[in-house]
Amino acid sequence: MIEILQYEFMRNALLAAVLVSIAGGIVGTMVVVKRIVFISGGISHTAFGGLGLGYLIGVNPIITAIPFSLLSALGISVARKYTRISEDSAIGILWSVGMALGILFVELAPGYAPDLMSYLFGSILTVTTADIFIMIVLDLIIVGLVFFFYSQFQAVCFDEEFAEISGISVRFFYSLLLCMVALSVIILIRVVGIILIIALLTIPPIIARQFVKRLKPLMLWSVIISTVFTIAGLFFSYFFNLPSGATIVLTLTVVFLISAGIKKLSVSTI
Image (cartoon, rainbow, N blue to C red; front, top):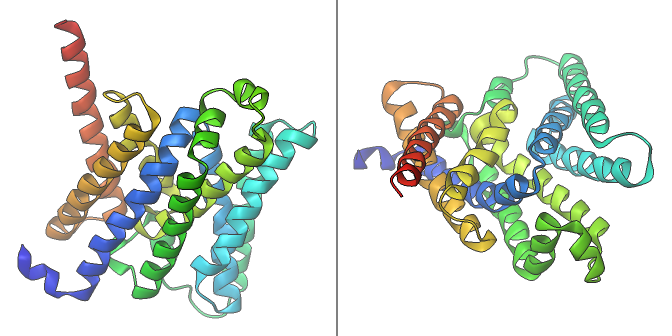
């Protein structure tokens, strides 16, 4: 098993597994606690428009997906506050428009769109050094924001009314949270793809939440669980020649089912 580490693509994949787990574990915890899983799905699918634009103008699709994701996050926040459009309706519109633009841009791009399927369904084994650099930068931004504004995010996630009474700008920090979801989506795209991003954002926190309730330990355990089983899924996909994104998600799903069974048994024996 050690000999496979001599390959650069495998070293990149392992590093990517750790980096996506940091973003997914931290932001995913807040997504689960705040119950905005559907929003993360809307942002991730809107990002496809940015990927298509990257193919059209000939730049790294991940770079062009960043502004698309951030704009969709801000669009949802604005719709929630300033318009009569319900939040789920705004998500549905952005979701559809993002996918439609992505399809249009890819169709207009000259030649064949390489690696398109890896952006849709993930391919951790194709992560490049440039992708790793982008992941590191975005991880640092997410960790820095949570470090400096942890108490504000905690208040907004658990009780918006209390946060408002305490003098916290709920509108600003909710928008900032959605922007962090957008950045997490960019980090996760190369590993599990747009279609499966929701799973990597939500399953590790859900597993951890069965045993941990406080936000900070929940974030830590979500990162640990995501790291361990993303790497496990990576090795399963490598040795059995399976699609990496789907294998990682199914590995986490099996762990969730086992943990749910253990939790149920422990409760029934008390």
